[in-house]
Amino acid sequence: MLRPTRGEALPDHAYPFKNVRHPAVTGQGGYLIWQSGAFIVFVLDSRLLQDTRPLGDFPLCRLLLSNDSNYPWFILVPRRADISEVFELSAQDQLQLWQETTTLSKILKDLFSADKLNVAALGNVVSQLHMHVIVRKRDDAAWPAPVWGKHQAVPYTDEAFAAIRERLKPVLTTDFRFEGE
Image 1 (cartoon, helix red, strand yellow):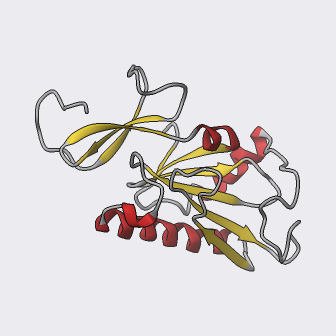
Image 2: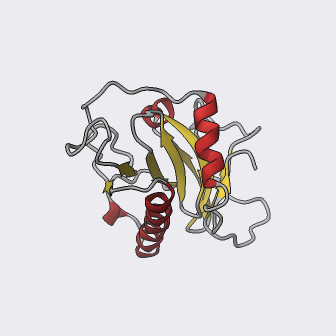
């Protein structure tokens, strides 16, 4: 584990790697996390990196947009190393995960006029704990079936991704930091 240079107590928080090099981090998606009195390295699973676009960060979770424009499909990833199940999180982190999931769900239901939200933590393919929050409409490509494996993913254009980000900016304000800001 890495230690802070000054030894001061810091809150649990994520620090995205910019010009930091660490042998445990390859590619993108690496974070230093101050957790339980020491810095640890958190790396986003390569499949999540490949299949999503980053939106930003809540206090606990990284918010990603699945790169499938068939559905507004969001993914919350707790920035905790080596966690694959909700019960493996601390009690405080479990509460924070549900708070962030609930906050996001309420916003998405209103913003996208959802008929239903699908909220799930499966982990059969990507074991790193992540929470899917998928906006469903009666006229979407897979309704009423689950979205997984139904249709070929249609990647977002840069313009469509930017439009979703802009729609979220006025409503995703509490305890959220957008990527690059």
